[in-house]
Image 1 (cartoon, rainbow, N blue to C red):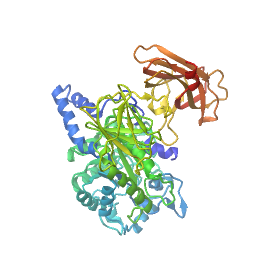
Image 2: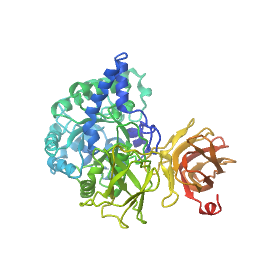
Image 3: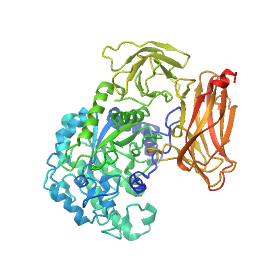
Image 4: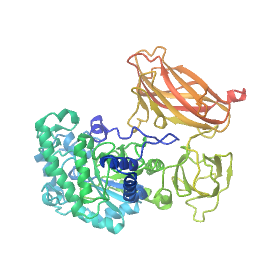
Length: 638
């Protein structure tokens, strides 16, 4: 993705706070935030009113929390050219940005509608495909940034019914089809930006006086002409379209707004109020503005590495790169990659939405259908471990992820143990039974305890045929678990990733979390620090290996310093340091052994890393720290 497209849709920084699992404290949940907001708005409402507000919110969120997985559909005029304009591929990662990236004049872009016949559109097939793939809700792009309404809008005749030879309302047909299939219908609406409207944002080639696509809010607030015209667009066009969407198509599960960071807080609130007035139980995503707006949080687009923004949150991902159909985009993710990302999100308590960009004729391309079938096959077998589950109570295991529902744990095994021993970390509860979810007979697997907080499940040497096997573990009563991650003496590498760290310092921050951006950046001060909690179940020595990037003409005496201290007493038990070397750039990562850390007593510890003697102008990035068992030191007695 280009930096500019990243700014357009994902520059809200919405995922870079909170907790990513591994035992660190999570940020305040949106239910509590809503309750507090309600109390504040009422000038100090009673505790009873705040509790009632929370209860109403929980009731409203119930279907969404049960669903866990949904389908996003990006379909519009841009789907017909599929990223090609006048015979040339437009350099844009997202095909739905065709109009902006190619600077297509409105009158030329409108002509796409003349050929938009959508002869293979079949709402029943769309809804049936979503249902068979295991998706519980479907988000349809009612209007994207190009301003063309993919429904029968009374507000504007720039819509699919009035302007195309197709001349049908796909949203009306989809509403009926989704009801028949038991899939919750939701709509996407680009409220902040409309490249067709003369008073909106983005289109400065037809309307030079407009707000630019990448302009910050502060840049136009003081411009009376831009501000006044933009307010006119919002109140005479965008808000009325949202109102009609909620009035014409029955119950809508949620309205998925986009680019809310391009609005003021008051403007975002106006859209929130509009939805609440028409359908009070309709959910609103965070991108209606910024934190703390909306009923749930969003990550950035295609962000496999996340920090949990709220108790309720959602991650969205494409099967290839583009959201809208792009004829030249063949960078398909394997189904197992998509499933792993989905499971990772659900294990952190989030929802996962997978996108398909239908072709201009209304059909799903064959590769998308193939991947959806593979995802659906896995969910048909293992959906019990996804639907209605909650965040893992265990520290992140190195072999996969965990979800929980009631007193049942579900172990999603990414890397099957060749030695036949699956160590389940942090589980204090008594195990009633463990079995492979794919086993129709649910034959019990042998389980034994290896301490107060860990168990071992004996598994077959060969994994089941499923791409990601799931082991169900029934425990007695309410699950009692330790969320601090376990240090593995052998069997698996102990990888402490950047997004699992708690960080502090004047400039240190998480990178975007997108592909190859799962690192910390802005490391430029001795006060910058990253910390991870872990639990050692036995004494041992470990080599600390740092993977980092460094950019500086001369790093001088700069060093990485790693300390380990007891969580109970705070006493430092180990300290190692090693030089920071120039790697060729922030994203030219290199691994370097820093030293050996010896843990003499089993217990819970905090590992911290700092950089000392960083010269002015130097820039560092940290990807991970790995603790590898030091067999030589162990043999020598530490």
